[in-house]
Length: 458
Image (cartoon, rainbow, N blue to C red; front, side):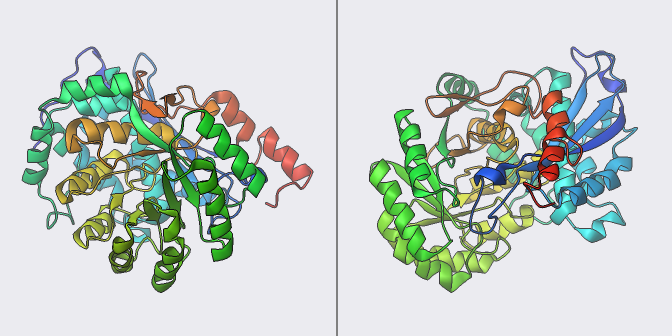
């Protein structure tokens, strides 16, 4: 479907702006020292990212900042993949990219030789997300809008022009997507005002990391309850006895009037997931997240079918590689909650496809966040989904974790446990230069000190 022309408005040099260079930096935070982020499969994660900056020849010096989230080791592999994509971006005219973003998405995700080590999955797709995130950030800055507002203000045909429908037309056609988006124009401004007034509902994962001792778990829960939080997620999958002990503590602290979700981070095979969750059903979780391999569509469907009589839904998506996996999960009725990840999928281009498919199949989207910059990124997806696609907040909630926001120039803003729509231009994952310098791996002072004192294996 042809794109509507994206004419320059307040930016007289917009049409002639080119990307002049790409740089990528390995930034790592030693979160494993405190068990922050720990779960059944990732017991000692160091929250990290491959941080991309696209410089341009725009007279106002606009840059695009993007990242993809990692857990420490392996970030160097993603950085190598980013560098392998550099030639596809540098010297490109940005107006040409944005005018038909789907074509550029296919160019960067299907380069003839590089595609072989994907396609559209693994380290290569993480790298693709980082580069595309930076491009979307640049576009929003050129338009002087936060990313969510940029997309909300686009015409339906323009949004469609950013999506590669290859491989998903058996689940969602361009015309079906266009119908959803046109319907989303009705009442759009009312929903914008609602979000600006009330924000988007959030839940906290900050209390429930698997490595937290009992006293710290209670302390965290009480702190968040005093702050008014009513929705919580807890990691499970270490051992059944320990899960029962920890969830007993959680329900003692939050009661049964507050919302609880649990997350196994792919720990189990299918029979184990079913039997384990049957034992945890007494704690009334809303969902079990990632009960098994993220690639196992039929396995998720079996778990969903077995747990439905217990009132437990299945959520997954943070490690689903691409729109094709999501297509199959939705077609197979394998998930009750669709969890997109802004760094796992091929940025907004692919996320929009999943949002639209989820809307067609009637499955609520609850984006995965946390990590480094994921809250800053995911908030835009929640606003876009509500304002112009699903038009519903039923059974929708956005993940929140409290750490690492201080490293960003425009961190998320919360109001009464809701995400407040950002107003600054861009995708808003621009890191403070001081944080990049301090936590750059391996030469930043934090890592030099840790390695000198052998506080961390490297």
